[in-house]
Image 1 (cartoon, rainbow, N blue to C red):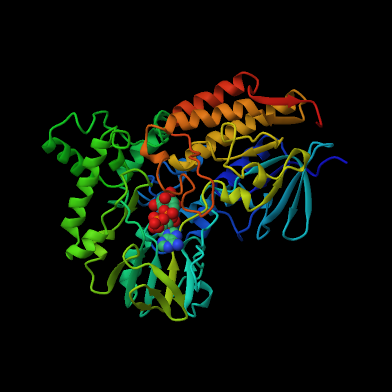
Image 2: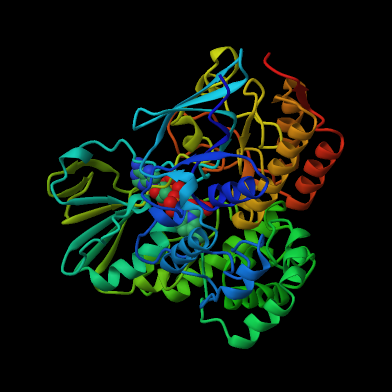
Length: 532
Ligand code: N01
């Protein structure tokens, strides 16, 4: 029996939308599945107050259509969630993409049949769909982490997770609100919640490094300058380590005088956003330079937060760069408000969540609303919550029991005809995601066209190149503190999760490698005419 479709795509976020569009343009039949009721992925789910991108909007957008990028008008330097979701909807309308998806239909199981070289997918509506190829576009930060805190289910007030913020909003005015977590989501939400709530209590386990976003409306002339040569901007991004146009100062923080170091840090702080991380090239690889960045933050926090005890609690203990830097609007200032209190969980751990609030080792905090800003089971979580079974019935969960292994972040040995967009082992979360998603999409489309032209039915990553790829990733990241810390990058935020750093840290080299692999007839992949 021939398969129902050429390709099944899981996910209707930025990756899923791009891939179905390009599949259709290239005459592949496709059926997509999406858990949400509409397109948008990350930007569909993360509707918490203050949610905003930390990559400039003019870069965090598709480049596959010149007309689209000329027509769409971003209003701010860093777009807020509602505007990005409007953009996703505009793209879905403009390219008529919704027809490829079944919405509100989570995929439960995907099984590869060795005999027919076909993927069979079971969805929540009981439907079974068969296709030659499976493409996962499930995102890297889409499996929310709800920690197992004692008593959580007994809380009688409203309990919300930033990653599943209700579309109808949450009534915060006049409420006593608690936020658990101080990562990027919390740091964006806290200043906005503080303005609405009667009282806000923030429960912090580890303080984060946060820089002001300095978000602002985009000026008409700067938009026009970019639009006159959008291709030029995209080409420049292609040469940058994270695929966005951030300048890295190629001086060491130790090559300059203390006064000059301070001036450069201050300039980046005033400029705002992630470019702070490029103040000196060696902030995450030279521990003396790292010390200087840590000291700069300590002084900044002391200068902004009036209460010295609160300021001391807000000072991060871990090295700068171990975790992703947060980008905020008024985060540290928020702790000067009379209605905001910071609880340091290292001094008074949570004993239990009660019906009416949070009881720590010291006292009970009464709450009407509890916000979990507790992050994600990153990179592997979104894939492993689906029961994916490859050749000989091997489960991805078992194969990755000791950590994820992929080839180029695109293929997995033992899982023929499966492609992972922005998978573990690709630049993904360390890059401008929309840009690098499109690089993956084009690579996969070229590969599928190659298979079609050469009448090849089966492609599978080989074990040895996959292992070598894993070793390359470790070698590439081993100099930086990023691969060693307790962060979601390494899986340390999820109890029991294997520790492995699975992100490629240098996008241009990654692209070069993908191009070489394709040019060599998909070296490192085994291609065959049909079933195993
Ligand atoms: O999640 P996180 P996030 N008890 O894992 C705490 C992207 N993003 O959703 O540090 C108490 O960073 C945890 O504490 P600790 C971006 O890539 C981007 O904020 O583990 N606390 C931490 O403080 C980002 O990095 C934007 O000690 C608990 C927090 O919860 C990634 O998404 C905006 C706990 C989780 O922080 C994830 O960000 C938002 C427990 N049991 C997100 N468990 C932009 O700006 C966890 N925590 C574009």
